[in-house]
Length: 264
Image 1 (cartoon, one colour):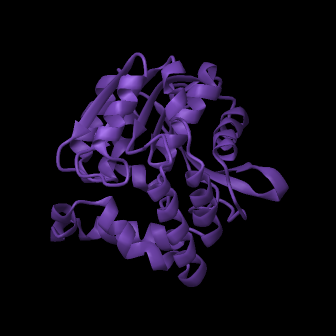
Image 2: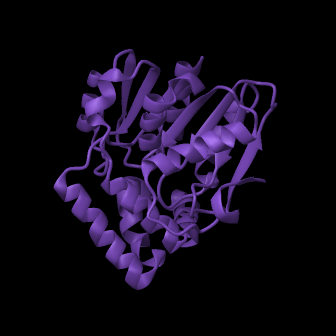
Image 3: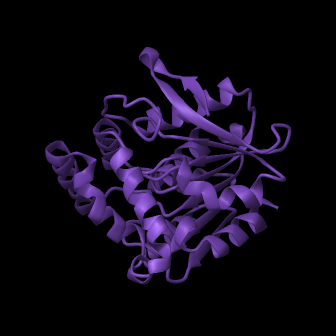
């Protein structure tokens, strides 16, 4: 792992896999996870790409920076990583808050990115969505991130996946990642999520974009993502049957095939 400095003596932790001379792909995590959420993608990509994964500020081994955060801050973190590693241009794959970050990057820094894959994300902040984050902030202020573990797992994976004993190791890892997320990191990102407002700008994106939704995702509904694709010129849309929110893990085979076809 490598550290990239950010403001006030804090740092972001990054992992680099594959040949550094190959085309770069930057992966951006969902809320409450760390770089380990992408393990099932690494082996299929590292022969032909250099993969850069980072723990979002306040997550994993990155500094537990006090919030609130904004999408501008989260997007600038990506550019800071790229500048630190002398990466002029990269592909970008983000899921959930990482997918929302991909929208901001495609709007504000189009010349720094090639193809962008936005997974399990939405682009707007209707009142019920904002209130759900207010409620979650209250829980974490009282109980820490351990207080949102069970609810998160229920949203992240379909019931069929959660109740299959073959997936116990994945469920346990997911719970561990949530508990390892600092309260500062979770709450800081929650404040950013409340300000999400990219839907009105999607028609101005001029990048090769792929939107990937999960059929059973309640947090980023497939219909909402399909609408996002309709609004984005040159974009493609794929809905993965049966998958919920963390679809790169729940439906890794379909997800991997989908991203390989798009990147190649």
